[in-house]
Length: 297
Image (cartoon, rainbow, N blue to C red):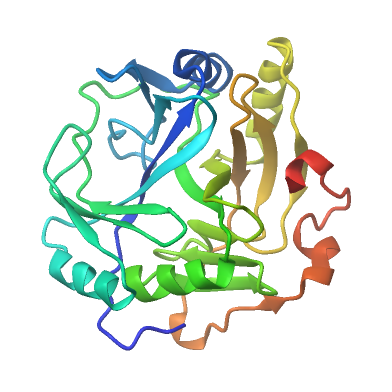
């Protein structure tokens, strides 16, 4: 799946838009449970953000919550440079038989391009919108940034080929033909693709926390609010990262709090490992306990 054209990688995974039954309730969980900064939108939704890319100013949103009858993935946005070659993106989309829609600048970002694949997965590339006006104060609960999204799709190999060929994301690791991990820069993965869903859906959104000691503070705080983790703590095989998973009680939206993600610095010598689906015991959690049935939905 190596593209034969000049790379035009995005800068980073920018934001994710999901519909939820009660945006205010989900936003309250993010704010009270995890220290997110949340602001209302004019369309009845909410924007939620965290501390920003380490010391960089926090963007106006990492997660947009829109009102909907059910929890549903609406859009995944990649931040790109102002001089990103959108014409090339449109050409590549056309080579896959997909139409590309031009986006005008708005509060969510600059002019860009949106592509919807045959399964309904909507992918957007555009320069990031302005950061929030006032830097967020230091907070022990608040994650650092949005690190990756893991999506469920009807045909994982087809979507994986699109992600690689159209967006130039680099394959980091693969489990059979059912789970692919892609990266933008050196971080092991910023985009995961798994099969088994009738339509595109978010398996989880992952936010980076500072390290091992963060889990004690976060999990104690969540327990005081009456929330239980769904799975973890543990350590994944692909990416080698620590993890804790939890779910918003209002929408069921699954969040991963991760740290210690592996980085790939030597592109020339790196060969993406490939596991088989039967290797689950060594991939999903190297420390032991298998995931609950809810995690496999």
